[in-house]
Image (cartoon, rainbow, N blue to C red; front, side):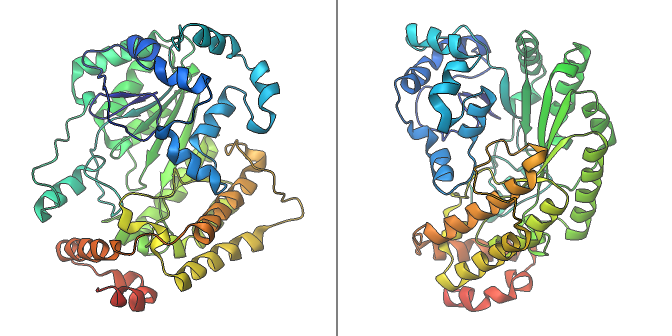
Length: 418
């Protein structure tokens, strides 16, 4: 389940938003939404239908990247290449049967959540949007990208809604996993408040907390609260160990980010937390991924790119010309070839958190980017106009220049109007 920043419920954290009836925490309970309002989703899936909302996962799987759909199947013990056997042995089988016999209804409650806390953020990443960054929202309004200041109100800013949601969470038997997103989660007030409430209700020792940080902050009090939970899945957002990260994840400083990365890795190792590098390969960074993959490999940290970036369209990696695609593929293949061993095999690793196979999972993620670059047809090059207009407007405000970070892109950028 997903609770969006505006309070809307969605049936999956990875699903594409489709126009239709919406339900909000303001006037709908978790139980009512999950058990009744998404019955048609369960019914379609039980009937074997492919959902348009799931297209993002299908594209990832096509290129060998592990999708959210596959991860969720694994959580209920279902493995695709052993579907019949594992479906019949899953502990959720009776729940599936119940839904099948009751037109998609269920008597379950969701035990695995993504909770969006709003757009309160200290970064303005070029591939982000006002929905996820208050700093970017203010800049976009100033530059005329949006017509009015973006309403950064989040359901989590309303004390009554926050109390209502925590009350409903506490009532869910066997609550398992809560993944929080912002903004920058670690500085969002609602995050520490929810952690405090779960600790107060004495269920923190049974719950896994997931979160993603942009590696620019270190709030001691919130970090202490996290130590009270059963387990923590720590995502660390960074696009490159190169200076291009400063441009893409403006206004960060790569030295500070590197120090925070090492600091969080040490914290995670000391408390046996699960850690992963969260990266979204885009046109500006895909040629600079080699060192980041190597860092993850050397430190036995997973790499998870939640999708192949498709918005904004003008930053898609399939906009690169052939020679630059080849450069990116050669760089990543260099990492793969350097670290392949005799034990490395072609078995697809779905559980990318398994410490015993984490290094192979990193190689697998790298290979998926190579596969995408090699197989994906060139995207609509008319997007070059939008790319250049966008970068120039940002740079005029930020007083920087992309060619200071990517001098090797000069010929390409000059040819498309930079």
